[in-house]
Image 1 (tube, helix red, strand yellow):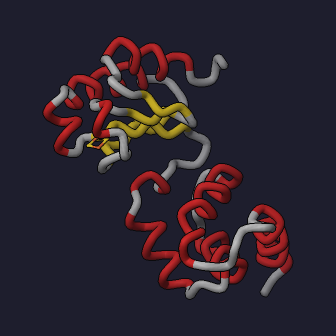
Image 2 (spheres, protein in one colour):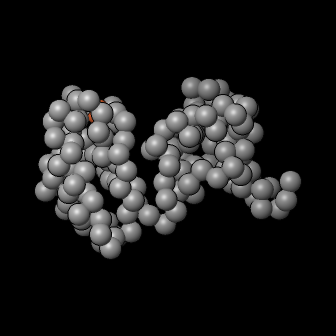
Length: 149
Ligand code: FES
């Protein structure tokens, strides 16, 4: 293990300090570390694996399953839910609005599976803001506001 790996392990252990060491904490743990590192590199995944005492393959499997963790370095993630409920409520127009507004902005627009907001579809997740009953106008404004907060 080199010094960079050691530093990441130490930092991730500090980020996850106090969290119970079990599988139920894997998603909250991944949220914490992706908020800090913006991306889940093999080194970060390994550090989570060691901190929570969960096999690397299991952490990697969860991290790679959820597109919400697939963030582009240096860009604010814009996740537009295109799952069934949101698709029926106009997610396509949200996607178009997000992509239009994203031109020249430090954002990465991605289609997402269900964001757990089905009762308030369509939904989007822009940076740390969850938008319920989102409209194309609201998504456009939120994307254009990235970097101006
Ligand atoms: S289907 Fe979009 S939030 Fe569930």
